[in-house]
Amino acid sequence: MKLWDGRFEKATEAHADAFQASVGFDRRMYREDINGSIAHAVMLGEQGILSEEDVSAIVDGLHAILNDFEAGAMTPSPGCEDIHMWVEQELTNRIGDAGKRLHTARSRNDQVALDMRLYARRTCLETAQALSALLDTLFTLAEKHAADVMPGYTHMQRAQPITVGHWALAYAEMFLRDVQRVIHALEAADAMPLGAGALAGTTYPINRERVKEQLGFAKISRNSLDAVSDRDFVLDYVYAACTSMMHLSRLCEELVLFSTAEYGFIEMDDSYATGSSMMPQKKNPDMAELVRGKTGRVYGSLMALLTVMKGLPLAYNKDMQEDKEAWFDARDTWIDSLRITQGMLSTMTFDNGRMRKGALDGFANATDCADYLVRKGVPFRDAHAVTGQLVAYCLGRQCALQDLKLDEFRTFSPAFDADIYDAISLDACVTARNVPGGTAPDNVRKEAKAGRERLAKLMQDATA
Image 1 (cartoon, rainbow, N blue to C red):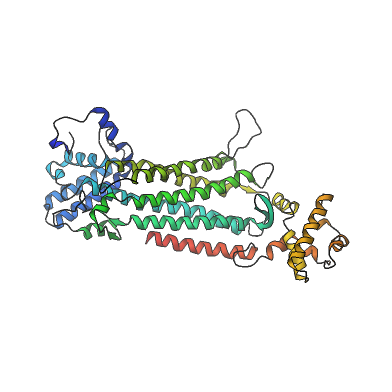
Image 2: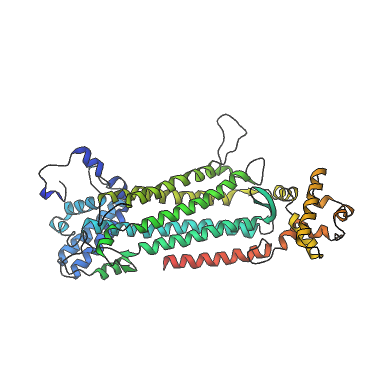
């Protein structure tokens, strides 16, 4: 028997019943549903809408259901319509008529909206914590490898020497922005919708502020139509997931490249790699590849949700039941990917010698050679041309700039002197870039410390 079937003369056709059931996936919101119902019942009692006896029976019954559910002593049957109906039916089975009074002054529409907002707040905090763990690993890498040189790239060509620490901090900046986006989604979800009813509010003398206080919301929703039909907070979260997965995919792409024999910059720990069933020598960066691949899956969730919402009239429509599976899948994929990436980064090893050689072999110090000439009074464009000629000269002789003799340098410009070798050493190249945001080791250490402070402030904002 359905809780809504009073006006119906026929039961729902079996396939239609299965088609519209959502308990298979919305059951993950059981805790939010029960806690929301407890707050609602307490408020109804305080307002004199329910008796003290009914409220006591409802609250005790809901706590018992929560304990049994979490202990694995019970689970919703497949025939249940959704988690909300199941909880109410189970409560009524346990305490009788008092359970039937729980839904007073409430619709399933605002009940679902409440559960989703409560779940969104929880999942935003869980996501922020996963991001925080990844960021902590990146800051640790930056501090440990603040002075370790590697080639930096543009157009996938060796460009200028940077440090591993500076590289790690580039990704830290991306993930710090992701934390900000999660906080925005959290703030968007932090409005208490219960009291909106099905769409127009309720005639009962409820106290919405009291429910807000019990559940720790920052505010109440201001329009009942919007309260039951708004899913912007879900879209905000999934958009944040898409952007962050893009950042993870970029990072994992580099991990895949850097772990190849052609680069040889890093080696994945055995615990985050796999082998080949045919080729015994293989060590494959499958976890990084999977994160890269799962990015498209999260993009699909955003497009699915946008498409569900794009043509809906006010207020609630059953289409909106399709919001949860895409949202839940994006949430699970994102958090799993963050944790896997954190594990890869915290266990992999860098080959500092190979990275340093890569920076030397690729003329990454050519810009510093040109800058040296500028400091000697040569116009930049002339210095640029001279250095380009030097590079061509070295390529013809299969050597690096630092391998040239001083007489060879002076063949191209009399401005060269013996101090050119110090100027184009890799350590000098990175140390000289000490402007704010630059790759100088001291600057990297300072920015890692500042990054930790920024993260702490963001996490404080998220949990305030």
